[in-house]
Length: 355
Image 1 (cartoon, rainbow, N blue to C red):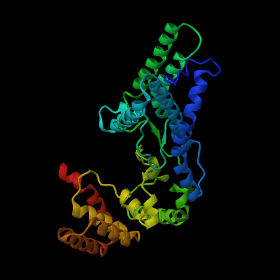
Image 2 (tube, rainbow, N blue to C red):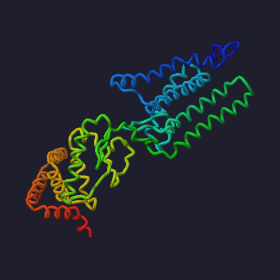
Image 3 (cartoon, one colour):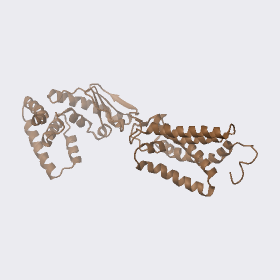
Image 4 (tube, helix red, strand yellow):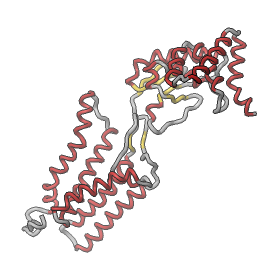
């Protein structure tokens, strides 16, 4: 534009019109790169996008406009032969390498975003931070091109807007950890039953009724045997919490159920959680004996064995398993009162050892 003396022509078109005509194909192409892959994926899976799922794509589309404006401005000052390759390489390297530097704020304001877990949605402020940086500088350049007012005034105003955007982006993201602000649990859930009520994502709903009935029966069995006093009001799938894992309480248990209800070992996991030891460090033989006893009492012996096989049974583990089965077989032959006493003693064993 500069070398062809376009800027010196009669003002039939404004700079904004010229820039828009030049940048429109670039912006549209960048938008296609952002939108076509997820659109094809959604179409193949027959899924409709939600408003929350559009936050990042819309933010990326606005970033494309801001970067296009910045590139156009640099191209007006640097010879076009070198402007394009310099901008392409420098811009890519600058954004890409923010993943490898500390502190974390450069990656958050660069527009680069990492993986998103199941049920996670970026906060609006997460999308706003890179827009403040690139958008502030782009807006400053647009102000500089205004055909009204003194050039010095426009330059000062443009600098204030650009610097304000940069500082605003930094102050916003300066204290963020590696993961930017997110919300979790944004998943349609299916719940059923009571005492406990059980909830899983909708796509697992077909497994839920049986899992809930078996869970309630297993907890009743363990309470009748005196092995636990747990009475959770709700057992919900922690898989939907993403990286924002929420702690369980006595009345609300948060457990990874998505894979468990599909594989059929959700009830066994509940059994293990309900058999609460009094300390974190528990003798392996004691722990596995209690878990196997609970699995047999609740009809979950196959799930226990499957879990042990997944953990790997080396010679030492096989020897431990033989000892555990011997202990449990001997205990199951005892009276109900003696089994209850044994379970309570086993759950309290670590407490006795540390006292």
